[in-house]
Length: 156
Image (tube, rainbow, N blue to C red; front, side, top):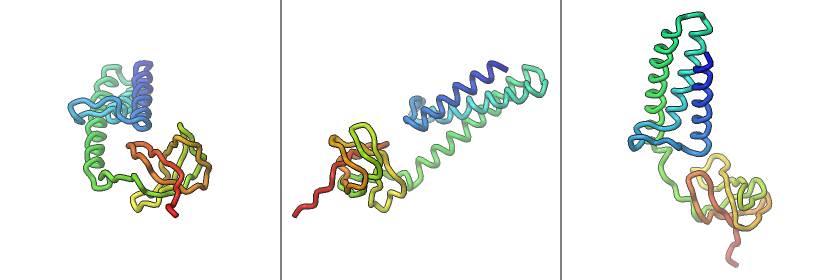
């Protein structure tokens, strides 16, 4: 049962890192991602632990874990491709979009609420100069996971 717990834990770490930081593993030009491998490892560990806890032979645990884990990898990868191909994942350039600082913004942390129609939630932000919460901001640079903002200064 220890092997299944270790593989499941490694899969969970890979899954969380892939979701938070981005896919560290991308094999075959997107054919296999870190997210889907993490899902597969978590399912492998869970199925193996369940089968061994129910007193079945170890070979049954390994075979069933491998089959169900592989199926989970394939389903996860199909879902990732489908989401990536949807219109919701279309690239939108946010440079120049105004918004409001939801939290204090520093060089390493902060959140903004942008006025763009495509922005339904808060977005991680950072700034070269400190910005206090409630200040109107404008996006100066757009990266996949965050935006660099500056204080909005309307031209007089």
